Amino acid sequence: MIKKNNQQIYKQIAAATSGTIFQWYDFSLFGYLTPVLATLFFPQSNNTAGILYTFGLFAVSFLLAPIGAMLFGYIGDNFGRKKALTLSIILMAIPTAMIGLLPTYAQIGILAPVLLTFLRIMQGLVASAEFTGSAIFLVEHSSEKRPYFLGSLTSSAYSIGLIIGSLVSAIATLHFLPISIWRIPFLIAIVGGILIYNVRKNLIETPEYSHLKGKKNKTTFLTAIKKSPKSVFITILIAWFVGIITFGSYVYSITYITQYSNISLSTAIVIVSIAILLDALLEPPIALLADKFGGKIISICGMFGFAIFSTLIFKLLSSGDVILVMVGMCCCSCLIALTYAPLNTILVRLFPPEYRYSGFGVSFNLSIAIFGGTTPLFLAWLTYQMKLITAPAIYYMFGSIIGLLGMTMIKEMKCTKIKIENQKISYV
Picture 1 (cartoon, rainbow, N blue to C red):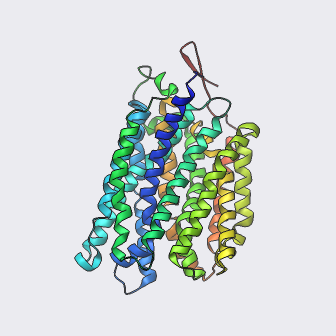
Picture 2 (spheres, rainbow, N blue to C red):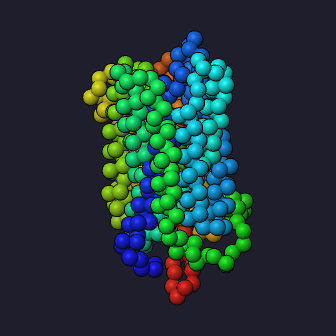
Picture 3 (cartoon, rainbow, N blue to C red):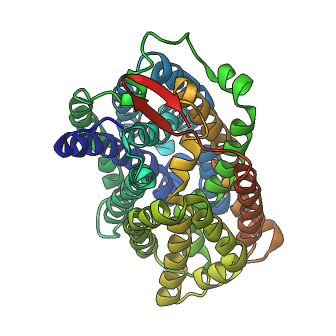
């Protein structure tokens, strides 16, 4: 690998991860404030129906995620990783801030949920490309000695974004504050978007992409399907599992805890925030272990953990005891960290750099759109239909099987690694 100044690498890491933190702060606000938004933007004849409508809207927001991934994948593969990341950050801030300005159902009737739906879909269009784009950028800047470590920082940044979103939401839902305070977290987005846009303008392009400039034709997701269909399929399977565990644990759990443990919304948000912080702190050291012992075996251990302990986790989350609920969420986060820490590098390197942004980005986000975005709605429906408090564990265990199937298929393949010598690029 080309040697880089440590200070320069730190700047690239900061620029990439700060954008991911901001994007997922923006995007998570909707999930954390679901009980509030259900009250303000939907008719209140049935509270359960309002929550289901809002989770349905959460799912709808992912409909354009694959299209957004295609768009930014095309930009990232043909015009540079830097350009795609810089553009996405400002386009996320605009719809988020506009949600904070929306009139409620009491003010404009049915138009309120219609406008909320439109803006949420616009968020999904842009947010889809941020996580995968940041992961690609960091993995392509990583060294051969620590490929998993840098890849894990995107997941940690994602978790930190969720933490900030959850803490701000917890403050906004304190009972002694006016209900209109919920608007402020959304309005903050425009300020953050402008600041991080200016930071990202100074990003340095990755060495892998720099060596491809002028040496390849225009590429799209169709190129990835044609040349790496197995990588596309594997990514879809593993992203299915990722979507279930992420949105089940860090979005649906808020409503689940408040409904079945009778714990206040603000307390539930704080509990989940602590669990997410644990995830963010654990992933980098676990990734260092992956650099030493191998990433696939560590991820597989995490997936087996969910297959075995999901029922116990949901029993703890529905116990009604704050301490037990905390234990359940922290156990869940430990398994998430174990599973996720090596995954970004594993999946990114399934695709060669010339169509990596499209191949990884669209495959991952297509699966997230279909299976991940629908997880909170499906879990709420499943629990209601089965009249079984631990019903979500069934879907968790199913997701574990899907994820393990994908990981097993990777054993038959070699992850793409970059090697640059004498200005010539090769893959090993």
